[in-house]
Image (tube, rainbow, N blue to C red; front, side):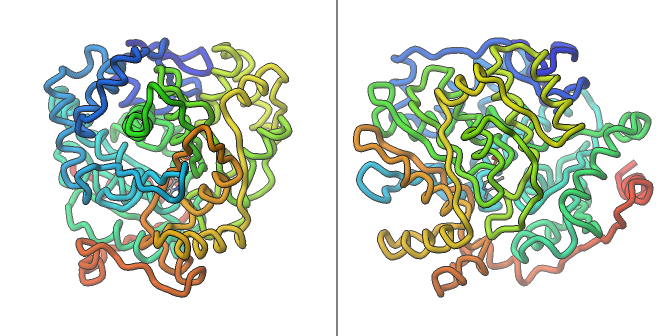
Length: 463
Ligand SMILES: *Cc1c(COP(=O)(O)O)cnc(C)c1O
């Protein structure tokens, strides 16, 4: 299996190289040259398998020779062992024809664990084999950081540094990053906002001497291996509702477009997904782009669903590449335009191609709160604000002929203030998380300055 860049000017890589590289050298994102297709029988046979067994069958065709079947099987087994639900991604019913896929039973209570736990295991195998030592640096608005720390803590050969905006993550999110006491974990509170964290991260990757010196690796959501891990729950949930013999729709709370793009891969693999509905909060650049063909940045308005507060939706580039028929030239052109003018126009042909699969909607802050309240009143389910955005948008796209599966991306206890404000009750923390509040925190403050950050990393990493 070979991987190519959406901008067409980076080396072709195998799976392991694409996973270790993250961002392609031409600034593009890696995609498989060809998406493997499962037959209807192969999809039907997933019925009744454990999540791990299904994952092995779905992921294996993308791996090539990078990992043996035994290695992949053991990585998958280790990745999901500590999830708090034996089904890993259980499906509950909200109303006739509308289902909620609970993706928040992993160790940090957000769907990011599905991908991060697996790539943690795959990195471990690859590094043991090569004897290489790497430094993972990530920027987070909250959920990615803790998922990465949880996945890489205690691993030999890896130091993990996470930059989060000081004072701008929830207390649960902060404690998840600052209480692990493994010596290879370093949570850095940067003076600035999330955009500053991302900008400093870019500075590190663009300093090639530094990059080589510390063996810098990226695990943010553009990493192909993360997208791939997320394909699995589209299959398991759709099959449990009758696929491949019945179509399904999905609604996905969307920020960086990684999660919903995994749905597009599942569809191209042969899963009968009719529609993928993009749900955005008030930061609705993707909804506007799909409505009008104009992808234009406006400025982030902080919301109660902060993991979707985003202007540049990185993985959308992969969908554009496919919509332009796999031609990297127009992708390079629109990405240049985005950088220089803050926006671009999607061609009529590409827009039509996108609309064949993707629908969209947005939820305002008031609508999100009202949905948290109404969902509890009608079903007894307490949902997080991101999931509520999706439930609201899904309700506008329900069709009695096709079941709708809405992705619930985080546990409500990660966002207790927003949930309490909406429904007058504070969500309970799962029992294993309560210890978070008794453990000492290790916080390192760092200035919004690349040089300061580099010297801190050089000083803290194991030699
Ligand atoms: C990251 C995140 C999202 C957005 O997912 P993308 O893959 O970036 O579109 C939605 N909800 C929660 C809770 C998240 O942590």
